[in-house]
Image (cartoon, rainbow, N blue to C red):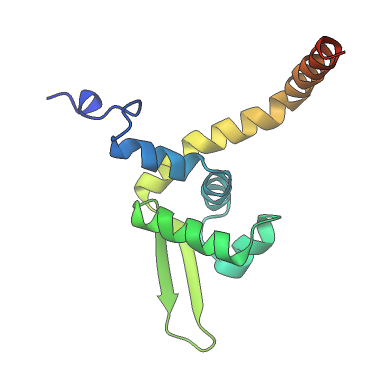
Length: 128
């Protein structure tokens, strides 16, 4: 059976839908893209680099990405504890895709903002 046909992200009960949500969530994209750029980072380095993320959300995101096989976690047996995070092979592959999307959004943001302004003006005019 063709593996690409085995799963259907459009089907409500398909497990691929949850994985897609993990890698495309706001924090998932940022963690994957940052680890792609930086290699191995400690928890505190990730938190400082991703503006606006709480410790709780970062911990949850890392745990989810680790469970999915995208992130590798290494706890060093030192005091104070040191934990490093890096991408697995699968994580590097996923990160390449989301990194491209993130950079495309950055490059196209002026056009997106123009579209938003046109929409908002048209919407405001229609409600008068």
